[in-house]
Image (cartoon, rainbow, N blue to C red; front, top):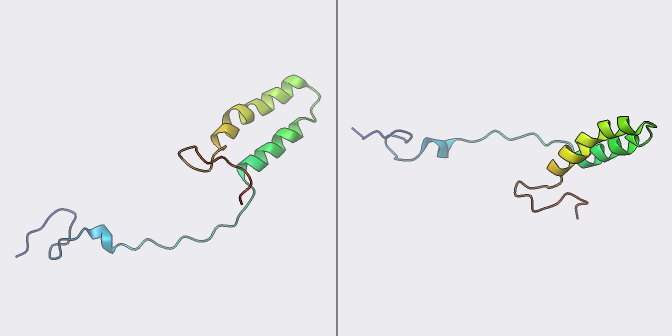
Length: 84
């Protein structure tokens, strides 16, 4: 009888996940980037006459969200911008 190891096929000695086929992911439609939507939001807020309200509405977006989404990669080395 073949020796059984945890996480491997008994007879082949291969890891079970090598036989697993991931399902194909559907192609997602390209929409506007977060940076574009947030920039439009901030520009639209400039119409407000009350500076305090405008600042309260735009500050979280500009100071927290835009820097978070400023890069395309996890290593934060490839900035967002027009793609070639």
